[in-house]
Image 1 (cartoon, helix red, strand yellow):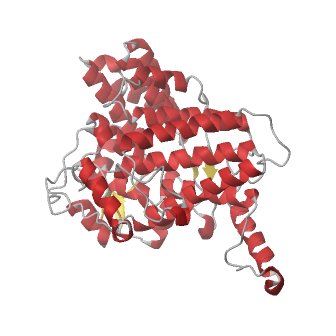
Image 2 (cartoon, helix red, strand yellow):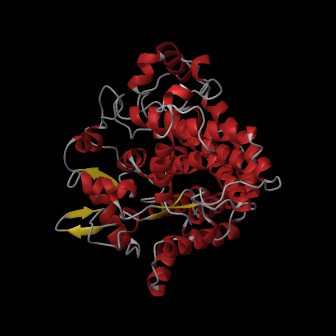
Image 3 (cartoon, helix red, strand yellow):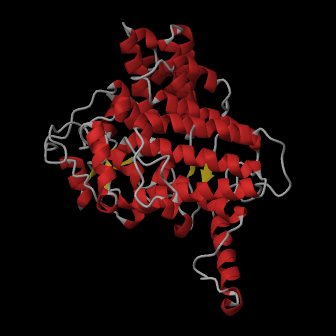
Length: 468
């Protein structure tokens, strides 16, 4: 596991190199180098991927899924009125995704191909696939095949959500091909902050992500058999998860913790979530929040038990817990009830271990009460048990996945905000997508309008193709 500070050391080194250039001799703008070494691009791409997972794109699904609630400032409007506007995701779209992970991923692929470094190419494709998968799950149709072409396509057309999901699978297949090639001297090592250049572990991650994004399509395609095949080639122990280590220093800290530090008393645990975990005697409760009077807090700088809100939290990009939950669902829906029960039990055990819960009696009591598929009379009842457990297991590190699960299954049942109906969410339903950012609407209006028309609308309650 490599430290995030290597990213900053790499950037510092790049700055030093650039500042030492003789401009008269090179005639190069030092703020726009013609090329950057692969070992400087990779840590930046990994860092932005991890940042996207734990910053605003995590908090907003967390609010929608009633993990979190606003108690001050605009967080209240998000929680009570669903006022996620066209401005909410500008930075994520422009700098976190297209100008961040995707641009850097493109460069890893191009420069890695030129340098005959297949592992950089493979990792770049995995990170691009992960970013596109989250993006299309959030917005529906998005620029894909026409994106990242620079001046060749300043106003990119939007691919359909179906096309983007297919493209994600192609990227992951291509990544596996590249990572299956022989190692080349000078390939990823310390600059790979996840696996230190271990191609085999990256291949397992690619299969894990293939399973995740196939699961997004359960309402549209018969994917469960293929999901089980992919899971059979993914990692099977927590130690092999793709984990990103944040650091204690505020400049390189977990964004979820940084929000708690920088914006105190604006966001808290939704009381319904806190009360439900307490009522269920969920052994994870003290690792998720603390109760201060009547307020459940997700962050306290002095409480090192709050596992997902530490400056130096260790965050899996995709976890064994998530995979075991997919396995439970896929086996249930393919008629293997016994296998589904085994996988669900393993998912709960993995979730408890993931955050350091070791009370065997409490875990056993919890599994008896909430992880017994025999309590469900029908397959839909059993599916509800699995997805509800996913809801509690994915808090903090994969709230976006919980939102996706809800949109594709309807579980767990949730009551929309009482005052959620408005111009951006006419029905007042729990939001099922985000609005296209205002920046994209202003600079690429024709293609945005075409995408909206193709989808029959793009307000917060207009479901995307995958989840209809």
